[in-house]
Length: 606
Image (cartoon, rainbow, N blue to C red):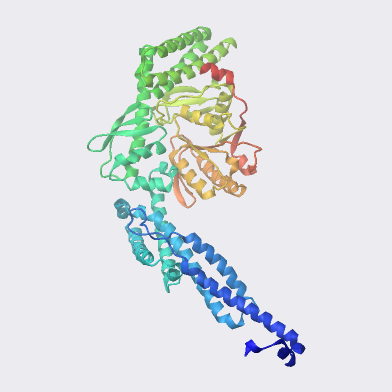
């Protein structure tokens, strides 16, 4: 009938009188048709969307979701379009179908989010709980993870057989399954974090490792040899240990190849890694003290050029400094600084002749570092001789870093470093056979400021342009005092929890830290750091001796406070993206401006 319907018939029916109503009906019908077509197009768009589960994930024997980005993009687009349809005045004929589709998309979106969250946690935890050692040490968390793992494998097997995204994601009960799995994995993660915190509490240097590195170590408890690659991250210069067939550690090696015998051997068999690592730390300190004592005692009775070849690099530097200090003070008392300067000059020329001769690579390195120290020592004596210094308490002398082998407050002979009013116990951290910075007047000034900060119970804050040696000078002072110095590059992503974890390790181990570009941290985080440092420095102030140790509660954990602990920060002021330190934080650091180094003096030494 419509084929024979003509314009004349249209007019005869009186349609022109109702043209407005007919136009409105046609317009509404067109929009309703558009909604219907759009709805069907959205449903049809899912027909060719599949997850890629064609290849197993690594060696796990199961799969992970791939192709999720396409699903997420499609979901986001369709949820927006469906919500627009729900608010359309032309949706009445399809209202029920649109609401059902919207509910389905929301369910699918939540399912996808929970599934991917489980996947992230599962991928992180699976290799951890794949280790029998970790399963043995965390049985409750291990069982809980295995339950989630079983659910994961069942779901992924089904997905590998039919990876149609909409079919898989709209399964009834799947959302609840993943929500419960995520709750279980959160509990597993919390148990794992508590376990790692316990291990860090037992051996404070573990605080300086990431969770992944620490888990790698803890998963190798039965084989100490596999822990060796991480030694250099825990100790300043230790690369490996010498083990007997019975897994007893007898020596430590530096990365340069230097070897130091332990005073007592360390048995690792049958012990947790944090236990024998603590014993290794104790033996490192005892062994360094022992070789330095031998160096100090043998120096006066051995010809110097022979002595420097017989001892490790660290001993050569510090034991010779003990005798240099004593000889300078004797020369000041006898008014014979000029004669002593001539002696130092002869000693330096003797080292130069030695370097030109046939010596080993290790000997060459230790003599090279000694030359740097000896040049500064000779320059210091020359200046004091010209100034006619006659008092051992004159500032020109006490402003130098001096070493004394003397009895401490525990009635033990130990190496003590002094500078102006600040005494500081030598740390005996093994440093290997490393080179030392050329000591310029700027270096001396930095040393004085940072050592003074230690006696004032403050941190140190060298500031200045990039490349002026702020961080290297701080590290070199740590070498001079044999303290572990952990360098950390700051970024705006750092939060107070990360910094707090670092502080726990520093305080418990008595180590130093140098936070590079400290003012890149956000101002809100810096304010919290100020409160953390105030608490730590307050606890440190209560200690009357460098041999005392106190306990305090910090960030919900009981930690030890060792008085040698300190924090240093370096800053590049005026750069884009740098924060101004809060006044409360500034007050905790002793500032020094580091400008242009003395390049001429450095080149002369090199």
